[in-house]
Image (cartoon, rainbow, N blue to C red; front, side, top):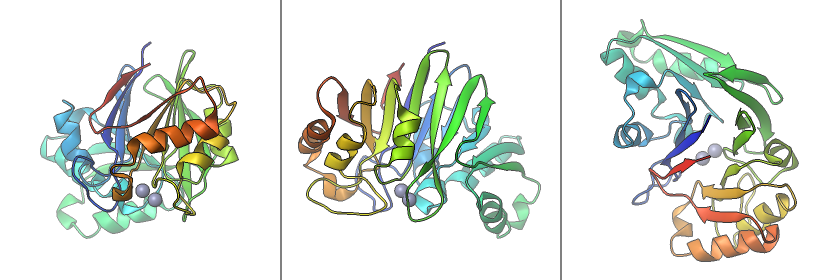
Length: 249
Ligand SMILES: [Zn+2]
Ligand SMILES: [Zn+2]
């Protein structure tokens, strides 16, 4: 089965034109949503998805730029007559959701079931095999590997370049990895091009798409690709992701 990825948002907490906050859809037979930051709900509509089709969301972590449209998505589904939804996320997801939803008593009949995911967990959703790995960020964070047959896609969420995400991405057809800042920024909790490239050198990945781009990356796109390749070595396709970009694997 072919897997199709639709990037909804390739931006971050600081807005800049053309890049909504984090979100993407991976579709085998049915769509799965990964992250749902501000603007991702509108991008879903622009990409041709109806809220009613999106009944499962997986969260990498609970920063606002990855979750702020999730309750709005649940409400959009509720307005269309569908109360139930499944959400998978790291520790704290249940408390976060109940706290936010608790501010809106009229949404009390939303039937959102939350499953907490730990690094190393494996499960199947809509015919796709999912494995979670630990990301290195300023709070508990996950990356996900999504497989269908012999095809594999990995989404890093927010992370420093790290061994656990490399393990998750070994041999993947597509790695969607955050690259928040260009060189020569030095940051923790996020990725920059050269370290990112070095981290995945020799990991057998076919294609890397960079996402989670801060405004500081504007105008540096070509350099960022060059700097990732300098760490990575030849033979891997590297590109800057675009909102509403579709990739078939
Ligand atoms: Zn974050
Ligand atoms: Zn983020």
